[in-house]
Length: 205
Ligand SMILES: Cc1cc2nc3c(=O)[nH]c(=O)nc-3n(C[C@H](O)[C@H](O)[C@H](O)COP(=O)(O)O)c2cc1C
Image (cartoon, rainbow, N blue to C red; front, side, top):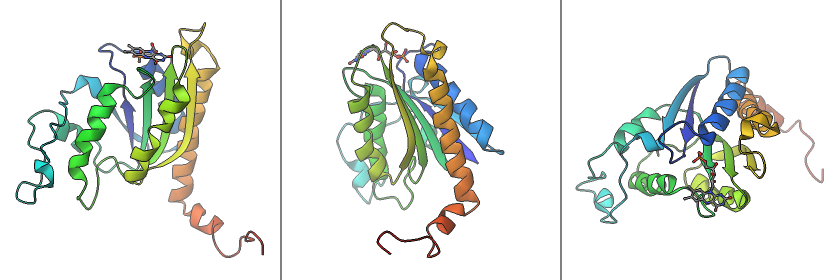
């Protein structure tokens, strides 16, 4: 089972975002027997801004014509069923690197299968002092458009604990990963359709 681990830090060197993401990876690997984790650090790739030309929407062209690492990153997500996304809050919102990536993914708007779409997702957002929840909320229109389903999320502010891995935040990240893993496993065993079947008492019945 392929799971993308998307780190949206803008630090070149391993950062708090990466450490929290690793905790969530530990969690998902614990629950999913055959987990194949594809780590992607956006900052390690050359992904330029969309230039707004809409050539990708022109049927004669049909693809983004910017020459950079974007298509390689898209290919890394091929065949994934789930994603763990970890990001810091920058200026009260998602880091620019993620916004740029979201905009570039628009080039697949008319594709039958949208990369980074149809995934179960676990999300981790952290910041120094504030605004983790609004930043988390700003991901949901994007998830919705890609038909992604967020099954677990966790938000942390550092406050007096610059190293969040030494706090209960670490366990909560593991829990996000485990919850994603359990949901994947349950879906695989087709337990979810069973739970939603006619045998289940209906509201008002
Ligand atoms: C450009 C920039 C903007 C930031 N904006 C916020 C913010 O709005 N609120 C906040 O609490 N922390 C903010 N921070 C602090 C980061 O969220 C925090 O340092 C986080 O741990 C960085 O994660 P990283 O090490 O993975 O980059 C900002 C940091 C940077 C570099």
